[in-house]
Length: 166
Image 1 (cartoon, one colour):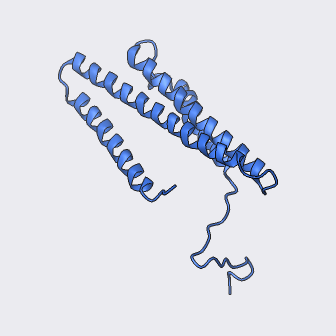
Image 2: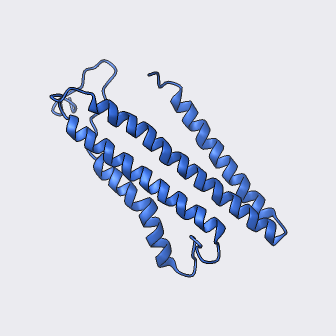
Image 3: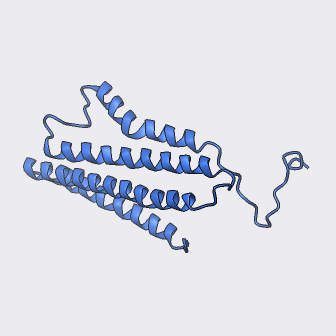
């Protein structure tokens, strides 16, 4: 499948999400009325939850497709089992963490008094929450993908390590 148009689409979607979220925060900060400000924060949280769900669905869709494609490879192909495990783990970790984050953000949007995610008076809870939804999944994915194959050069020739200094 052609993938040339995916990068500009990805960049455009990211810029759009950041622009919308920044606009929501800007409007919330400018609101004079407390109810209007609270409504802005609720809409902002719901938007963040929707973006997190979209990211989880994207990981499930594309990770699942890649997993199924790798399963169709011949059994004797080199590295198939390792790649299947890597793709499955990365897909499940990312989809699970984005789903958990979406659930927590959506719940906090409607119950800000009992379930506030940014607790300035209790930094330990902040550390635990962000470690579970941001740091731990990132560390797991980086550990799983620590040995990526080297990039190919344009001509297809890749110098041996002993030849690189010459």
